[in-house]
Image (tube, rainbow, N blue to C red):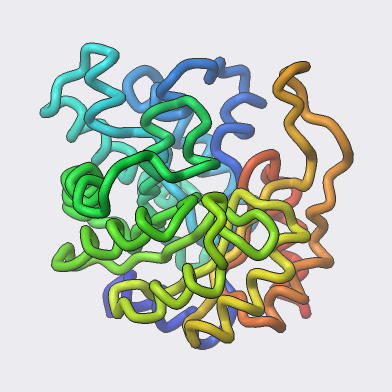
Length: 303
């Protein structure tokens, strides 16, 4: 059985633990991510740092590592003087770093790699991934996403993570771009209450994914834990597919002060409710680190 098939089977039999935030793990190790490439910059400058971040999550209890390719695009690399051939190599290396971490991890359970495909707005690096509505057609967005998805698929991840998607136009483009790649995907929206970030009802957004055989799980990420509570049950009801959920810590970013405020509301105790509502891939996004993932893994494997 292939590792991809094993992952699909695992989603029918139990719950798989995802990792946490790549950027906060890299930042905690002392790396400056304050440029347009964000964590993808380290694919060109410090592969060992990326591998170490993945390894920390595997050894904390994660079963799946999400690659550092969220903000890795041909257009973004080109602005740094990196040509298309080299950029293709860096995209492939994002999968390689996660595979290397799995090789080094001192664990006996199966480990998987999800190749991150972030939204168009992540390439713009202006916060528009949290708004969507870029003024592009579905066909335009498909033409943007397909080439890097082809490169990532050729690097043989177990699954593609189509993540932090703000609106249904982009989701439709991604589902189209996924066809024929030979690698399944999960589709994960960035939610605001019961709507996508662009304002469409989540119910409609999830229904779009329900029609795509290549999409093996659907859900939300990069939202608050409270928003995830509602979204998980809705995604399960609308799609009948396994649900993926990996919210942020629950703290709030104050753009003026350039600091996080408030207290985390992501606790390990929440994940049992998500599992009961249909979640089969559970982890964390921004500000969720290895310690929290260890608690999540402990909760899911003992309850």
